Amino acid sequence: MKKCKSGCDLKSCFLCTMCIPDWLPAIDANRQNFLYNKGEVIFKEGDPVQGIFFLYSGLVKIHKQWGSDRELIVHFVRKGEILGHRGLGKNLIYPVSATALEPITVCYLPLSFFKSTLKVNNELLFQLMVNCFDELEESEKKMRDLVHLPVKSRVAQAIFTLKEKFGYNEEGFIDIALSRHDLASFAGTTYETAFRTLNEFINDDLIEMSNKKIRIKNEKELLTPIMNAH
DNA sequence: GCATTAAGTGGTG
DNA sequence: CACCACTTAATGC
Image (cartoon, rainbow, N blue to C red; front, side, top):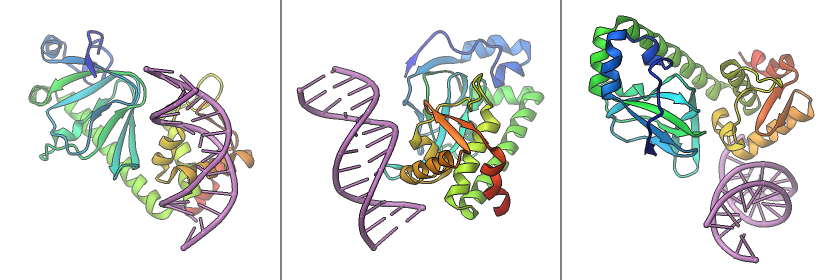
């Protein structure tokens, strides 16, 4: 992680798009921009919360760890989105970790300044609230899936969720490149099982994989086990 | 070259 | 279904 000049352009992130123009100079004065390389940890479980991040470029995974090699990916954060807003709760310790999946640039604001901003900007506060509700819903869906769905369905669900969030690129592949390990962690299973399940899907001609990207070839059949389970 | 990490495979409880 | 052991491929110093 290192400081950098090119961070948020004060136009396109969650904060800036909703910021009242009068506050932009104050944001500019209080923020710092950082660059993280792929694989670098932005914060991890147990760290004290001192500020809040806005992702200006790149991709981040939010995950919980168990021991050394088990993890569950809870959420992905894309450019423009807010990162680390759990710091607004009363418990100022991060409950999750955030790791860069690509080189990223972030805009960082001290928590106290961000709180002041929220107090004078209703729209921002409202959108943040909506955001939190959406994430709560997402989290509850994930809980349900982890408890009730068999692995095969969870892998299918994970692929579907990625499609919903990231859409398709020009070649029709889901527009996110994940390692098999991250895919497994997102589906809530082990690497080997995820690997075998993906091969099943490929053999059944439901999906296609190339360069860590996935193309859905038969969405109906891919989602059949999920529909049945629900 | 050699060390390290990711991908891929079979077997077991 | 997770876990372990192992091979192979890719990457880096």
